[in-house]
Length: 333
Image (cartoon, rainbow, N blue to C red):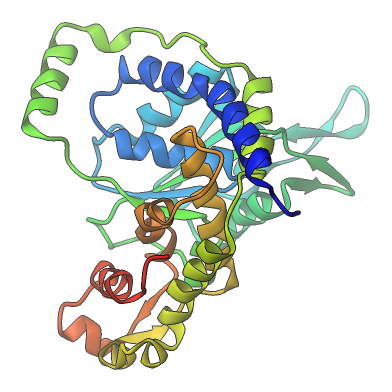
């Protein structure tokens, strides 16, 4: 679809009006969660772009509280699944149970049937359970017996990983990590933020309830509108250049990265970079994507899609360093 300058202006006005709920949502969740603005924005980007988010961070950084507060502010159904080594696929998606009174099998739906799912410490459960969850994420449906059940919209899975303990864990294979639109690294709060967290918890204010400030209908409309956001062809080429530079760095005068990258981003990386950039523009109440939207979310979209060689690990080079190098070299449109 070709956009005229007038179309973009009208879309911009419409988005400024429709995106007003973003401020209400941030303020309401901000009453309970101090700091972690980036994590909340990434959750909203996942929600608006119909993707799922993988969070990595040490325990106690309000990952669980963030998604719980977000679901309360939207009045969505929330469920938490604590992944453990003895978890079974049926514990996640549900199962068929024999009813002795009726002499028939009845369906008992699992905790996956909710709008917001917190898959806590996903790397603690065996591959069978991980793949059951990831299949539900991809297909947006679950098959129990001979019947398929559609999962409710909006449907957002937030999976957390603890980077500290690797003993007794089952790391997510790269192909399965690729199903998450973003992998977000959650960092510690600042000194001032932590001082407020101490005060809030010591005074017992933490128990305050989050009020519903957004309706499900507003979220559904926002998701549809975010997809209509205008993206210029120059920005599309910018996204393609970034992703292609992860596959063939030598074509972008980045020969020094060639021995460090085992594999680059798949076409899913390009799609998700475009979707997340549009959602980021929506959060900033804009009807068009600018290169800064792409740059600001590129690390979150790409960090779990680029494989490092042993050489890179031996030189203590991480994925973030490589993405920084690529962003430095690719000309901004």
